[in-house]
Length: 347
Ligand code: PMV
Image (cartoon, rainbow, N blue to C red):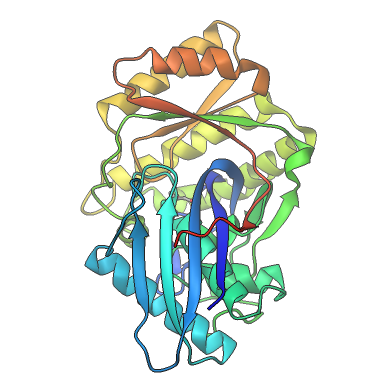
């Protein structure tokens, strides 16, 4: 049987998806904008199995072995495979192996890269990789990991939200509807060579899933306030990307990250994604700026901190962050070209 392998990157949100209009289908309350990364990626190999057999899902281990995934993740993968079968009108079964090249479940968007890679690898295995990218993006999102919608594109990506009052009723995954606008690239990776130094302060899985975070977000008294602030914030980010202006992007990036965590901390029950290491890194980033280095921090739903800077500051930023006792290690990443087909199969 032939195999298809796709490597899909994670992304870092400049404007966050936080709060869903329809959690099951990951229809967001607000538009989001992200940068697709280069090194933090998931590789996924898919092989077709005869109809009537059972799907097999494996996690690839660093030593080359395989293990079965945790129960909940296994079920999510199974449901997504059903969705992809339905989309393609196929009854085939799949053997799937997936491997993350970076810490899993720690707020580093491993579900975005994981479900983007799975969606594209299955589409490829079924001979449907020529489907429009917008359709594949909607399918990836339908996995329940909304941010996967952005990881099927490279560079800078915007994922719009339906107008208020829309988006809360069903539509077939992958189809184009008004209440389900698709993500799209807003600038290519060549447009702006931006670096992202990730300070890893925690490698375990996060305490509360982002799925649960979206659910609780609407209970925060600050949720509506952020919705009011977002149109101007989105426009500032779009303008900063167009102008390749880090000093314009940086402050809005930090405002947005603080607001996401403010909402998480003021949800019922509250969620604290930060660890003492998060605060240590935020402090160090301020100090770097006082020394004249343009570096700005953002965090997704986790304790680890992404520090955005120009490529010529990477060595200084990485050295400073690495020297902090609270930082386990740093990952040097940056804007990436998006998913690619790979011939290096996992099995
Ligand atoms: O895609 P999800 O359900 O894992 O949610 C992503 C949530 C954030 O990473 C915090 C924000 C984002 O837009 O990526």
